Each structure stands twice: as C-alpha cells, then as structure tokens.
Image 1: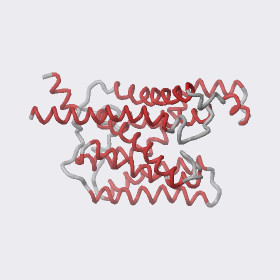
Image 2 (image 1 turned 135 degrees about the horizontal axis):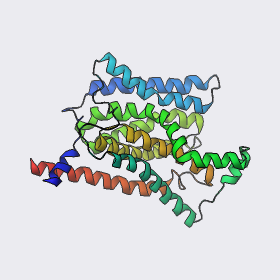
Image 3 (image 1 turned 45 degrees about the vertical axis):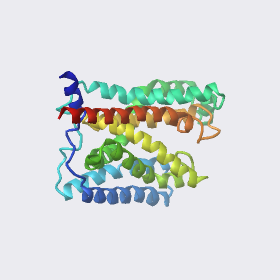
Image 4 (image 1 turned 135 degrees about the vertical axis):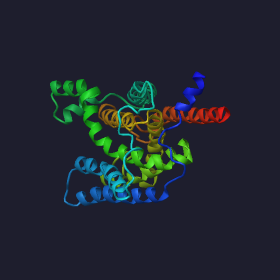
Length: 296
C-alpha cells in the first residue's frame, strides 16, 4: 500500500487530458518575440549583455502571464506555491535542486583536473577584474546563499514560463517527451545570446555551438521537469536553475577552459554525469508509470 501511494504521488496534479496546442503556440510566439526583441533591440544601442540577458529571461514569464490572462486560463496550474497541497516532504526536492547540480558540476570538474585538462585560475581572474583579496573572499563566502538567491530573481522569469506554462500543456505527451521537447525549444531560444554575446560554447562555431547548447539545455530540462512534477511547484526548479547559472559562471571564472566543448563546466566532461542523472530520472518516470498501470 505504501508503495502504491508513493507511485501515485509521482503523477502530477496539474496534468491535462490532452495537449493544448493553441496555448503552446501562443505562448511560444509571445515568449520568443519578447525575449528576442530584448536581445536584439537592446544590442543595437549598446546595452550591456548582462542587462539584455536579464531582460530576455523575463520574456517567458511575461508570455505566461499574458497568454493566461488573454485566454482566461487562470494560474491554478502555474506551480506558484512553495509547497504543493498534494505533496509531502517537499523539502527533499529543494535539497535535490541545490545538491544535484553541484554534484554533477563537481564530478565534471574533478575529471578535468585529474586528466589535466584544466587548472585553477581564480587568483588570475581576480587580478584581471581588480578584485582585492577581501572582495574575492566576500564573493566566495556569499556565493552559496546570497548570490544564488539573487540569481533566483532572474531564473524565476524563465521557470514561470517553461515549467509554469509550457510543461503543464505538454505533459499529456508524458514527462520524457515533454521534457525533451521543451529542452530543444529552450535551447533554440538562446540563439541570439550565443551569436551576440558569445554565450555558452561561443559564437565562433555556431554550427557546432548551437546544437551542443541544445543538448546541454535539454539535459537541464529533464532535471528541472523532474523537480517540477515531483514537487508540484516551480520553485525547486527556480533554485536549481539559479545554482546552475551561479556555479557555471564561477566555474568559468575559476578554472581554465581551453576547450569549452570538452572541459567543465558545460563540456562533455560534465555532460556525461548529467546524462547518467537523466537516465535515472527517465527510468523512474517509466517505472512509476508502469507500476501505476498495474495497480489500476
């Protein structure tokens, strides 16, 4: 009986009976229009990439709000509660949201250091940025909580859209298909910042950088979908997204990256452990669905 209850809890309370393709289309058109307008429109007058990037991250959130209001859909399935009413021990999802990205990034970085592909450069980076030892120590000390918390302000803009609107409408396809579709769309949504701001793998080889970035983002999408469906809330995903963004930036600043496609924090050396995590998640989804079917 206990196993039956646990399996049933894996089934999301916000799953619709069929895909709302009309809502999906309107959401995607609006999200891409708003975000790409921010990236390209603010690029022309020379607005810094950090400002453009933050503004673009709120395109998905604004799209979610506009489409819900215009189509009178309400916000019941947006996952805005910190703790979903029908979920228990939600703290585990927040713990996983913080620790799993750290473990994956640490595994990739450790492999790079063992094989000698990267080395520690944080002191050099601090000197280039004219950071005193006190400032550098303050940044490192505040990174785990304060900086991650501040980054959550911007990652909320994306998660409210991708996992707060698009995911509930694609879930009738199943968690795996929905996560993969969102990952591909989400990856392509980043094209302007790859081309304009050298984001991710850089703009030098867009024919390689864009597909590689889509792969990385799709891996994130599976993990963030797991957090969303398991917790019933977007907030563990907001936290995990912020942890990834924060520590990936810290990784780039702290360790040499001679080859972004290979090294940590986003190259193959980190993609591999993330693939393993995703395979486990997909196995859990398939296992729980089969179990519920046998119990029905």
